[in-house]
Image 1 (cartoon, one colour):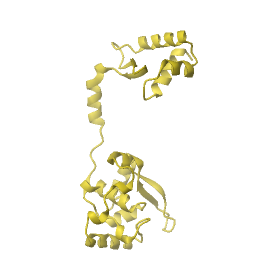
Image 2 (spheres, rainbow, N blue to C red):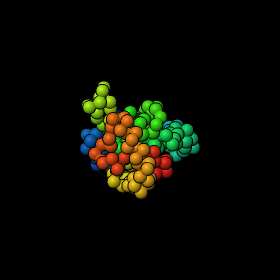
Image 3 (cartoon, helix red, strand yellow):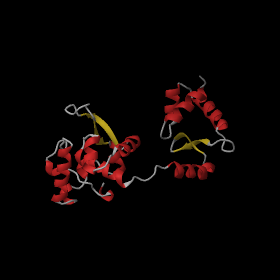
Image 4 (cartoon, rainbow, N blue to C red):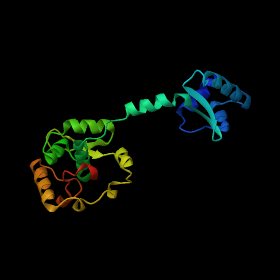
Length: 205
């Protein structure tokens, strides 16, 4: 493998500029060899003909998108951006947040409508995940809980950063949730019945 190829591979996997010293040591190159490799990459990634350019920035080298392609990239980002979450998705997230881990059946029982499609969507987005199985229920259904990606997206460090349920809803709604969970044969994991989650409005999810 050529020196330029080794340097190129390092720059492609690095999220930040890589210093010349690091490139020399990791690519096993002399100072002259590194200079020749960078010159080859500068030619290969010419701003006039490539969507990727080699930048010398912040004391190191980095492969980045060509600024001339900024308009195309922004249009792509707009079109590729995931659709906003629906109110149903917020409700399922609320169930996973306040009741989780819990099964799909428990989510459906709390919401009163089938939630399988919404759960699949949230699993695909990485906002909830299967974290185990309910071994006491027939078929050992998967248990669902919110993920670290969900916490990061909401700016929370942990589930403790969210408001307490009794500050969001009244006792009558909590009683309805307890009844629905009871009909599904489940109780909130790691909590008392008073902590059961209602159908929390989207803005509180």
